[in-house]
Length: 600
Image (cartoon, rainbow, N blue to C red):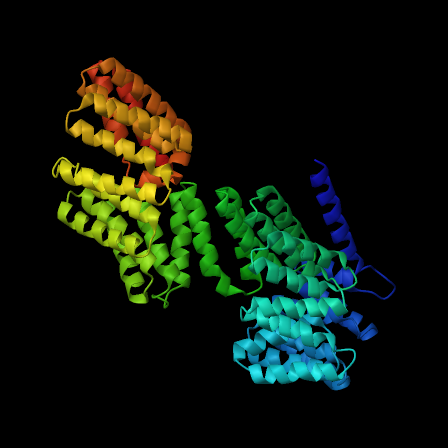
């Protein structure tokens, strides 16, 4: 409790300190400008910041925000004209060139961003943010020789000397030379303790997965209020959230995401709001909090459309479709997946396109439309194959194999499963390998293709893999499959023991689907043994479990090879028929229809 309170107080102090940078003084229009911009009244915000610059042309932050608001207002040419005129009127003011660099950065014009960063430095700018823009635009343009020359030139001027180490630290971090980057930024921090130095060191430590040390530096950055801007604080909150997520502390991560979003909304930091919303959506996906994921995607999409950052939309539409798919809202999932395809039209080789076709196929399969699903899986397969996206290619092939199995096209299913198996073994994807072994084992238990020797062979392979790779969470599924094989051999007692063990192992592993599979296996076992009362009792139990835990079951890997209709509902209805319980037959049929509707 004390730690949570301390963290809350710390963050409130950070936000309050950040806001002091924009404290209202006579003739200071910045707070009013932010208020107008937060209400999307960008023309008014632009006018207020122009007045601010006319009164005091030394405020770096005012130029950066002015560039932002011109971009958000979609009046880029007006912004370019303003900064160019300001530069002509006061050619020695470096901030006008920084404003132009920021404006061109919004348009993804690396050439003009680099050019104006260079001009700002020659006019004496000491902005660390400028150096960040300079380095990243130079690397994008592959102008490393010129970048080195520009950074060396900063050493000739006392006020700019610190930018040399900062620039090289950012450069080395960007090209993944993290050891030298860390050494360089530590040299920088030996000479001066400032916000940007600690931020860059926090970024380097984050990349090295030293999350606690990264957090320490991010917090040090936030405490150095004299250097901090509100927009930079938002980036720190986002980075802290990512660190706490990696540390397995979702409550802390959620806290920092919300702090960052709130500050972004209050200060009209639209680009930062977009980026932190997108990051939050992926965070909520990891937690399986799909409504929150959808909310974050909607916010990010709204901002992306408002500020013309259209490159973000395909991924956001796909993520939103995924959230609705997981919430079993097929109509909205298909809507946003379709929007993804529209936005990626012309990029038929993109992994996102093939992933989206795969997702749409999954939905049609859940809607009991295997023919439509088959078409989408094939499109996903072809696009992924041409583009060399092997993982998507074989995931699509796995689904195609499932449909072949459903159609009782055993030879085609076997061929497809084996291709996926070879890929999974080659790339050492143990979970996918396990799935293929189980699917092949189950394929040899199909009524039209019972080959017990082959079914046992693949099950033994799955068991051996689980022990070799210490993935013992699969043991429950293996016992369930062993029970199915025992039933085919009419070994009732062995089947009973296997299914009971599957239930116990499922409970130990926290796998709802494994427990339900074991219970469903016992229904078949007691039907085969001629004990209808026991079969009915387990039917009651499994249907209650399924009703309570369906959402969790659908999340589990076990659902890949466990057919709810064939393995649960048909045996349950048979059990109720054998004891003449017509009301239970009706109830079970209605539960199945409701479940299919919910999944759809």
